Length: 309
Image 1 (cartoon, rainbow, N blue to C red):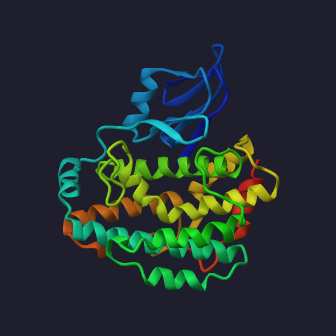
Image 2 (cartoon, helix red, strand yellow):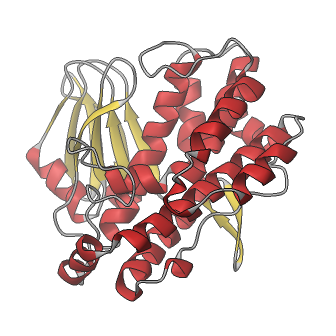
């Protein structure tokens, strides 16, 4: 199973040896993980060093190394150049995708995100009928910016009237930053493995954003992080503690409903990335396979992640 490896202790050294990621401190091994199990390595700590051999070994397996700032948001990412045997043709189709297609894809992504937000609110005991109306009102390209309208309703209901989403703030905002970093790494890996370029998005188009497509595709999954952050805050966890990191890392294996039965978040991101390839190649937005939330997402599953030692 893919694993997110978080390095949060200062002064650690990371290397590769005989198929394992080795974590050392003062030349003494303190942990090892099979490289084939690693989806991403997230580095938060100061003074961490790593070998070139490790970075190459991770890239060969399609895994990412993510470097984070003090607010737990990513500031740099090392990703593989080769992701798929058909990469050249797929990137060409991605680059040449017309605006009508990308606007329809973005519409479908926004609709899925709003439906996930509704499921998250229902999980917390809130009524979310308005979100069904909002989802049905999204137009091609979301030219009415319904995504923002939904967000203005969503955050006060989920987090309280005083909450403000601020990427530079500590507390719950820091938890959200970290959780989104985990999911962003997972989605970026799926995008690269599918033979696409993560910087060519369907909506996000900031020239400085190397992960525009990953930021597009992550949107429906965000409420999973939101729910987990709320659940941890209720338990008095309002900082990115080791307990919080374990819980967010466990999100990638959480069960979701899929077209062929129950699937995991990891598998859902891979299917989504592969499906957008088909959209680019066929010119049909209907090929997109977006993750579906349960009628109301299970609080037991999220609580289990927090309780996991």
